[in-house]
Length: 110
Image (tube, rainbow, N blue to C red):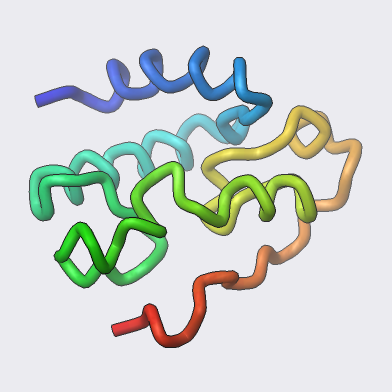
C-alpha cells in the first residue's frame, strides 16, 4: 500500500499541471492524504475524507478525490471544500481564505 509521502509526490505534479495545488499547510495535507489512504483501504477507492461515504462506489463517485466539486470550488473560492487543493493565489494569500460551502446535493447525503 502507498504511504502518504508517495501519494503526495505522485499527485503533486500531476495536479499542478492541471492548475490545482496542495495547500501550503503540509501537515494538514498529509492528514487528508492519510485519510484518503484509509478510505482506499476501507472502501476500495479514495472517497473524500471530509464527507460521509456510503461505502458504495457508484453512490460515492462524485466524492472520489479529486471530487466533482473541486474545480468549481477552486474556481469560485480558491480552495476545495477540504482545503486540500487550492489555487496558486490562495496559497500566496492573494485571495481571502473563506469558508467553502458544501456543493454536494442533499439527496446524496446518507
